[in-house]
Image (tube, rainbow, N blue to C red):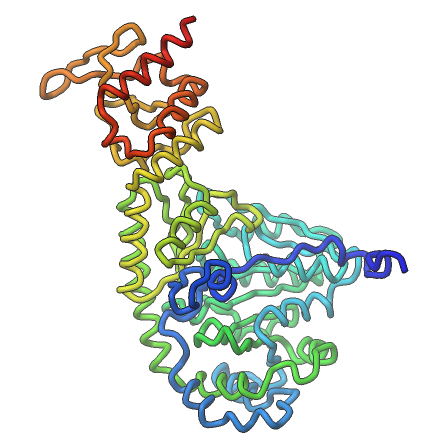
Length: 490
């Protein structure tokens, strides 16, 4: 028999699985740790953990697993409908929100249809559309703030546009789209027979979310579908349960294509109990507001980090000022038993973005302490120097160096800090300059050590010495300098 690829639908062989956070079990296996030994900042779920009422309901109903689940999840739909003031005919339940994303694309996207998707945002929208045979028109967001503007969205409507996907608040940026802007998009789309899919998986974590949500507007707008995640809201990622709201005709079409018994018995029971745990959600929102501010202030103290404002339970950081990539910082933090979200897989972000979930104070303090230790470590300084040499240029703002800020304005050398300072060698461009307390040795005009090929030689010599820079004698350092300088003069 030949390759099975020829027998598969043509969209499938080119699909790339979406990378997600919350990979504690996988990381625990590869790092040979117990899952409870890893502090997970990569999964943006409720920082209080599972709803206590959900846990009690699970414990009291374990025997229910001997029955098939209700294929329509009717008790769960009923409590959701009552909370929202809409009909059960407006609600569909999914095995997590991702099932409903894929179901929606499967029902409404035909080969050649186009979906408009902002970038960056949650990657499962793209996978769902491509799997169904659709094409993507990416709306690239301005990295200055990653804001979604209604006029820019409407300006991207095309003849083949079938669905608009939005995450509100957006993942991974944490930014909300204003209700008036969202309604403008929905109304403009309706005039062109375009569906609008709004993923509000993080809306429950927003203070005063009633001012932003469109979930109660689904009956007034037949082209609107709003998604919610009970997994994230109530700390139940292992059970997989979410729901969506739309007009009755839309929900009926989705039910026709839905997998039967898609949500297991225990997930339905836990979700019903959790939706009655109002006090739990009040505490969660209060904690998120307080701890998000605590983390933001903590990150801001590291001058080499840029923190983006967030309206929900996670923060997006630009770490390029450290000289580290997201992959490198993730690896460094794992040494401290901390897992973060590397955002480089997000379309529209480069390798210098990470996402941090908001957790409790003690856990957040542990993260900040570990981050500070990494950025000040001699081991990382040497690794940063190596990255500089590979690039042949200064990386970031060099603020990760423990010597930052430098001795005088204007110094921005290949090394961040010269290992020979002060060499007092005027022949290579150094000089004494005046300062407030007298004079200091300036490397600003040094033409020698700033050359990448010279710096590479110096680094190779230093790395042969298995000692921190502080412990290498001055005599040995000057010897290295003279050896390389003389070698280049021959």
